[in-house]
Image (spheres, rainbow, N blue to C red):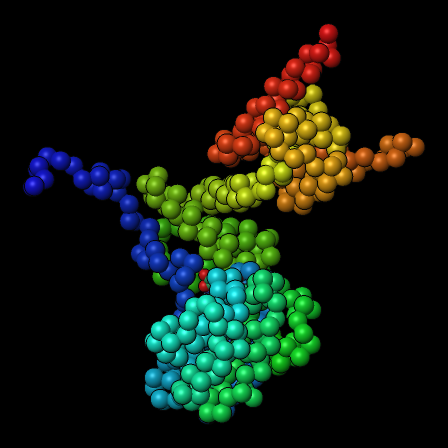
Length: 422
Ligand SMILES: Nc1ncnc2c1ncn2[C@@H]1O[C@H](COP(=O)(O)OP(=O)(O)O)[C@@H](O)[C@H]1O
Ligand SMILES: [Mg+2]
């Protein structure tokens, strides 16, 4: 059927955008730039350690530490690309693999993923289940030796692997060279957590950390350079107000120098400006983007709480919204929580356990629980929400348990207050 000429396409009726982004992709989280301002020293260090691979010998294993957003993943991917470009040029026998251990976090998965980079028929020849780890390991050694190459294997977020599955697979991988005849393997482990090696077997720890380096957090000036470099490619001239980049940089610098946060702020601010068909991105949009990101963060935390935590949070909110108790004790929370449990047939935990949950909610920044002294009556905690009710309410309405619990606890509260008044 032919479309009628008069029918309007919804895309044609959108307001005219496109004066801002020259290349949107440049600000996306998966984009890997060609240059890395303020990371040249680190890149040179890693390249220096890996250079022996181009001459046919095995480089040392490397451990890279640094907080989130310090460029670890992007730099590792960049170096991997550079290495591959060199291989194409020189025809060296180098093989590279990249695994994100947050996504692949079982010993089997790690070995299979490395195996798949050697051969396209790995999946056909190795069963997905039923094999012991040693068998999969032996198959991997065979494939590696068939290739005869030096493999550089990046294990990104390796701390997640150790937390989930222990260090068994790292024990195998860091010892693999004594089981290989023609091939060699080097590992690059990347971790956000500097303390994760304390959970490792000492042998694994020393083998994996033959070389180690730290990516320090960026300061505001460095973040500004990083944003400038991206902005040049991403935007048309004049699309940004002059202070926009500095503001994004200084906000992200306050949060442990996170380049991802800086880039996200800039991207979201720009998208908001586009939606408004604004002529340029102003600092006002940066503030709005920051609010939205914070709100998203709170939403994620609240919606992912376990049920008991939700019940406790609902109890605290109910007490507070009655304005009977702008500062409540653990006992007050426990009373209201008890009613919620009764209504939802939830097993009521002990008051002591509720005390623990209150501490956890405090650590997550949802509530504040302050210890105060009652003189000779000992000490108690005074509890209040740390986020405005108006901000929490829309999130709670998304969660049927929390909104029902809140309604119920609020009604109960009213009844009780009225009884008290009589
Ligand atoms: N020095 C830098 N130059 C350019 N972009 C950078 C730099 N450092 C980080 N980035 C960018 O910041 C974002 C976060 O970096 P990423 O490598 O994912 O951090 P990490 O892995 O340390 O958490 C990515 O989009 C990355 O391209
Ligand atoms: Mg990373």
